[in-house]
Length: 401
Figure 1 (cartoon, one colour):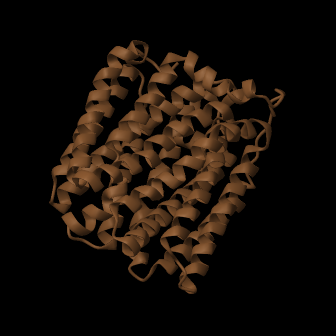
Figure 2 (spheres, rainbow, N blue to C red):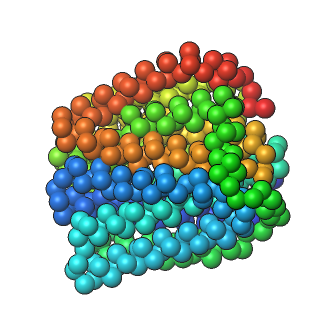
């Protein structure tokens, strides 16, 4: 309890955490609305996958330059600008819905804008957080921040599903307000900014890549997340599971999307109270294996309650991976290249989420959603086992520092 009080005395950290809560809530609402809107328009698993691909490609191209930007400019202002752009995207969707010109192409092009914006948002966000807390509070700060984000990830899909039942216009309008509030709140965050003095060059832009490549523990942890969620992510197929397998509507889809976050929220509370102190590497690998097994259970399930439980377990296991990976990254990275290292991590996250959604949609279009999800879960378990041999330094890592 005393540690939590210590965290709350850092006001800029609290404000930034609140802004991130608003952002993730609005983003989850927006993703629920976009996915359901696209499926209503096209009735196509392929197009659901394209929504993820159209976000991933611009993010992949822009993230490394964005990391360099995050090391040169004020990270809080950069983050606030990204929120304002996402508010503008939501406003465009409000306009398009009101005037009834929403189309498959419009949703895909707006997905490109969202992916481009998040390329700058994520490095700024990850590099700013450790500037707001001392090192001895960082792991608990990451866990508390994860709690707030998972609360938003729970509330966002559920609220988005309920609001979508009254039409997509309501969801898009609420997203505009929340994104603008997050932008304004971030502008109140204060920290001492030390801009990198490196000249803009290919070598400086690639400094984050070089650092991660040379640090085998970070390379193993980030690549583990990439392959695990690339194979095991079933998020893109939730509209299909909700409507065609579990026979529920937008409200059920919202609950399905919220279930992983519910499990992650409970796990982040546990890690806030009992942070990892020993056997960090094997705990990380074991959590990824559990994620894969729970994904297989979800893939075979046609019972709504069991599906919710399986998704909650995937969220709890994934939270262990997220908190462990981010804490290791922040503790081992010098501040002057944190933006660029965060950019590398963002590419891994983007690949595991957006590209994973495309992979799931493509496999589902060819062989059906059950084959897509189950094969991905099995592949995730195989990756966790393989990483014990490929990255022995990660597996044997005992403590965070």
